Amino acid sequence: MDYWPLFLLFIFATGQRKTVNGLFVTNIEVPEIVDYRVRVKLSCSYNMSGHKLNSVKWYKDGEEFFRYSPMTPPTFSQFHVAGVTIVRDNYFCNEKTCSIEIKDLKLSSSGAYRCEVSGDAPAFKLTSRTANMTVAALPQHEPLINGVNRTYRVNDFIVANCSSDWSSPAATLTWYINDEKATSDMVQPMQETTMTTNDGFAVRLRSLELRFVFDKHRDMMYSRDILKLKCVADINDIGFLRREKETKSYIIRDDNLRNSKLITSRNSGLKFG
Ligand SMILES: *[C@@H]1O[C@H](CO)[C@@H](O)[C@H](O)[C@H]1NC(C)=O
Ligand SMILES: *[C@@H]1O[C@H](CO)[C@@H](O)[C@H](O)[C@H]1NC(C)=O
Ligand SMILES: *[C@@H]1O[C@H](CO)[C@@H](O)[C@H](O)[C@H]1NC(C)=O
Ligand SMILES: *[C@@H]1O[C@H](CO)[C@@H](O)[C@H](O)[C@H]1NC(C)=O
Image 1 (tube, rainbow, N blue to C red):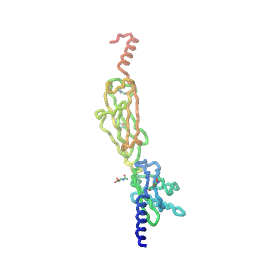
Image 2: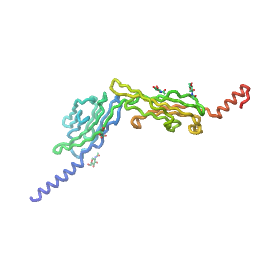
Image 3: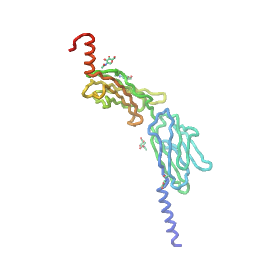
Image 4: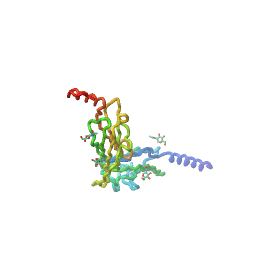
């Protein structure tokens, strides 16, 4: 009989330990940045480690907008939160995962999304994970390149203008000459125009002008007679948001030029040189 308290303490201690180790959110999927014209899926996966699931709640900036309770029958509750419109009947929740889809994204849909999982009585253990989502007006098309000619000659002064699509956040433009990044002395100061869309996004269009003298030693790839000019538009340095446009021009080499002049001079009956 004297051993009972100790025995109970032992069970309690191991039980506590298990609870501390168990019940955790293994993964939360919330896009870091998303275009306001798309629907977005938010999903949360958890490991109950033997506990029973009591509820899964989704919050935006601390306000609950969705709740799943796997009781009989399972219930799905929605609460009004600014910027969060849940797509009807497009949620899926069980003992392992809970995903929902939201639409009609606005500026106010940006924020911290939290998935909170709670275990059953008596512990009602809570665990959660949060991810930030930024709603953006992402570029819908590649940057535009203007002013590039079909052919150039060595020592030509080349001028080209690249402009991004309207976006918020604004794109960062970079020029590449035959895959080499253009140096700062080759580009003019960046120009920017701002406007506010009907949806309240302060979108910006940027343009960057490239100006350089074509130098055969620096810019010519002797294996080819092609000049590639590429303009890259980056958004927050996020790889999959990169958009780019490339143009190709033909370089008339000195020897090509001399040959064509020779042909011309022969044909016209004049002596060359
Ligand atoms: C859940 O967590 C336990 C440890 O608490 C681990 O043994 C088990 O493999 C995990 N299950 C899954 C599906 O990840
Ligand atoms: C979300 O953004 C807030 C404020 O910008 C920042 O303090 C927090 O660390 C971010 N949370 C995550 C999970 O990135
Ligand atoms: C490119 O074409 C424009 C319009 O035809 C012309 O004015 C300009 O001189 C050309 N530039 C070069 C470097 O050939
Ligand atoms: C480049 O193009 C943009 C967009 O068409 C225009 O607003 C800008 O003035 C142009 N820049 C130059 C230097 O031509």
